[in-house]
Image 1 (cartoon, one colour):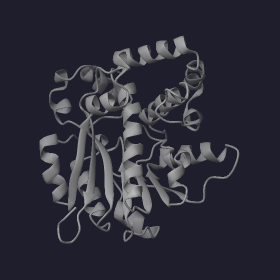
Image 2 (cartoon, helix red, strand yellow):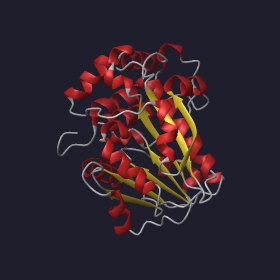
Image 3 (cartoon, helix red, strand yellow):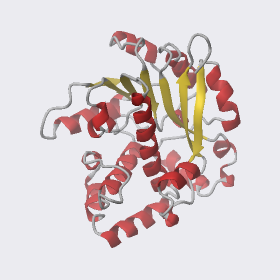
Length: 298
């Protein structure tokens, strides 16, 4: 990420959610009236134009050509995480922490979170822009949401949580979306070491990229160009997991892997009818894990 700027990819994800919000109510996967406010002037125009059906199809097609699979993957992944989060709340979770929150708006748009603490943690550049944007909107920010700032590669997340007296002894769901692929292995290990301190019955929902996309990008459609484009905006991908090794990795931190799905799978689950958008981004994955009890059970 360039100094003193917010993540460009965070803005693209906000654009994808804004485009989905503009679809007819009976066709959209979710509503997000806040996403458009994080867009620059050009992208706001694109979002507003997309309410016209033929324009929406045209815009989706342009995005698909520039970023094959990214739009469909981002939309389906958003819904997938929403559903997993609701599932954890129904199983006794009483707190949500969003690591690398970007322009995530779950604390604002999901009614089932209103009664529970939501703690967002992100890089200072993105976090500052987000809070400025939200404070400029009419009304008060919900009292249940806290916004904290850190750099995952250089600062201790554990120390940040202690400083702000975040309670690790209540069941918590941690969402870590769109972050691990920008970090070092050491930073990821440190984060999971911190997650291990949460009480059993806590959950983590996180995304990652298949490590093969970094080693052999030409094996995935559109990946070579995508990695070059990310380098050009100084948002380099640096780390990926081997899906076959993920379960054992999480076990080291006393988490049981419950689900691990690639973009092709969750797109097929949520938007199989959007055939023209379903090619590309197959290397992007989402994992769902539960903290084991002291006896070792999930």
